[in-house]
Image 1 (tube, protein in one colour):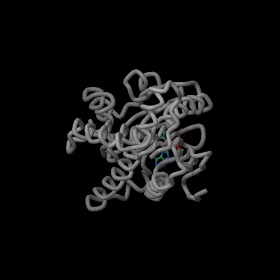
Image 2 (image 1 turned 90 degrees about the vertical axis):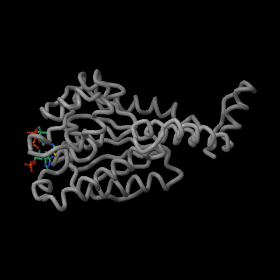
Image 3 (image 1 turned 30 degrees about the vertical axis):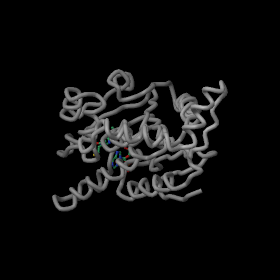
Image 4 (image 1 turned 135 degrees about the vertical axis):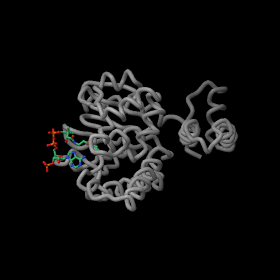
Length: 261
Ligand code: COA
């Protein structure tokens, strides 16, 4: 099992439980943690035994309360662009991970925490979750993709309001706005809900799941023609053994047994 300074990375029978582990700083993302997130997701991508990731924050108070304001306070025009682009790159790696990434959001998900949650494929939130992009309170704007992903998830009017006011959203409002897939009472229930979802997702053909991730992401990528990506992905599926297995299993009225090839 890998050792990280600011992350807890536990591989539990192919499902990685990945927690941001700076609870005394409400799991604020310093540059070191961003680098470790990059390494962790590279490890997830490269290890064929890993099937999925559950991303969480350690402790009871926060998923992540933002980028580290101590580091932000030292930024200038020269290094701030790099800081932003680096975070954007790492969050894009998470969003484009070929294995399902499910976020459990319990407590504060502010600034970079809201942005990290939005980079997950699916979000389960607890009643204690609080979302917001409060960067304007510090005289800055979201820099890890928040203006883009929030607009994609909740629409332009609400994204504009949330980024301009810096207001926090309750768990119920976040659910109503489409920021979350499900809202549950506590972390335990969230883990049970994730397990239920993963049981379904991981019983499907893994190549098809990876292509679903690519195609749904393509819908919000202006550099890509999503319909073309979908047609290419659809064709690519037919080259897999799992495609033959899935269709034959249906015709033979039995359950498919997918192999990931
Ligand atoms: N960066 C660095 N440190 C942070 C942090 C952040 N984004 N958010 C919280 N912390 C630290 C605090 O400095 C404090 O550290 P200390 O005990 O060494 O002083 C510790 O985490 C606990 O935070 P505290 O503010 O005392 O908790 P609280 O319950 O009173 O308030 C929040 C919680 C989330 C409302 C408050 O911490 C906050 O507003 N954080 C910043 C949110 C933000 O602006 N995020 C976007 C950053 S771009």
